[in-house]
Structures are given as C-alpha cells and as structure tokens.
Length: 242
Ligand code: F6R
Image (cartoon, rainbow, N blue to C red; front, side, top):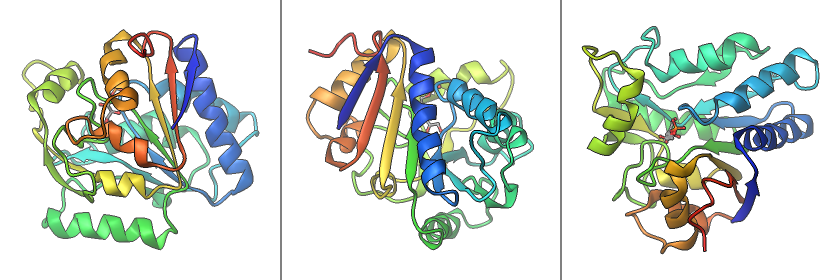
C-alpha cells in the first residue's frame, strides 16, 4: 500500500484526478472502475474541467461502477446510474454505451451479477479502480464480514450504511436495503486501486484499513494484499494513524 497524506479534500481530489489523467494519457482505451458517494464528486469535477480544457478524453474509455441499489432504475435520482450521469458522464466526451453500472432491475440478479463480471473480463479487466471507504470499513457495498475473495453479488446493507446514506433520501422516500456490488475479489483484480478518504469521520476506518489486521471485519483491509493500491487521504482522515 502506498499512503499519500495531503492537506485537505481539494488536494486529495487533484491527486486522484492526476492518477486518472496519467492513465487516460497512457492508454486512451482505459477501463476505469468508478465509485459514487460524496468523496469522488470533487475528483469528477476536476476531470470534467480537464476534459473541457482538452487535457484528457474519455472518448475511447470504458467504465464499470462498483455498485448500485437493487430495485432503483437509472431514472431514479438516488440510483447510482443517475448519479454517474449527473456527476460525470453527461459532462464529458464519453460514449454512454461503454459505461456500466451493475443492473438494478435485472429479472434474475444472480445471473446479472455473473454477466457483469463477464463484461469486465471481456473489456480486458479494470486498469484503475476508484474507491471510497465507509465508516465501517466497507468498499463498494462489501460490508463487514464480506468474503475477501467475493465476486459481484447481491448484498444486504448494514444499518450503519443505511443510516449514513439516509442523507441522500427524502424523509418519506423508499430507501433500498439491498444492493448489487462488485466483490472484494473483483476489486482486487483491478490492476491499480486508488482509495480516497477525507474528513475525521473516516479516521477510524482508515486506521483499521492500514494499520489493523487483514480481516473481513474491515473489508478495506483487503487492499493490504493488493500490489498497487494507493490510499490518498487528507490530514483529518489520517489523524488516527500511529
Ligand atoms: C459508492 C461506494 C461506497 C462509498 C462509501 C463512502 O459507490 O462504493 O463504498 O465509497 O460509502 O461514501 P462517501 O464518499 O459518501 O463517504
């Protein structure tokens, strides 16, 4: 694991954007693994800016998102497909047909999960996978106790994650308790992994991921086994490191 500690969230976003910029410059037809949530928003804004400035192009890139709520179709404002369109895809020169989000409305989710894995393999595997981290150490929607070699599958969200994400839903709005997520094994297959974390509320999870034991109790600790994992954090998220 390479640990990069920066001053604040802006520097973290810029550092993350540099990694994606280098990747796209090196290989225009890169396969990018993407994430949702609050943390990557500033990074996506920076990539949009660089795309508009002509510094990078997504024209030949393919993307695979980590996860999606089961049962929310892409037109639902809380779906991760909607999020990706709004936060990145609608604003860059990407071919939407080459953007993939786990299928939330599949008649047979189990088959759909296997097919998602197949699409990643057919695209040549993920070159760089972007990750955030949950306060409970989850990556994607791989909650604590997820198998360290797990593949894309349906996962029940923990109460902690449902509570954390309640801020995105209106009070009387249906909030799904099930998701489809890439597994930890799927994530570990990416050639490079970049995890971003900012803010003091991530400090405990960051400590467990980097300095704790390799354990399913902290899914992000599985990144200790990855050959090219870069952990980019601000000082607040690093505050519990020894
Ligand atoms: C989102 C995802 C999640 C988030 C995590 C942190 O696609 O996979 O694991 O990265 O819940 O979310 P934020 O960034 O909102 O704190």
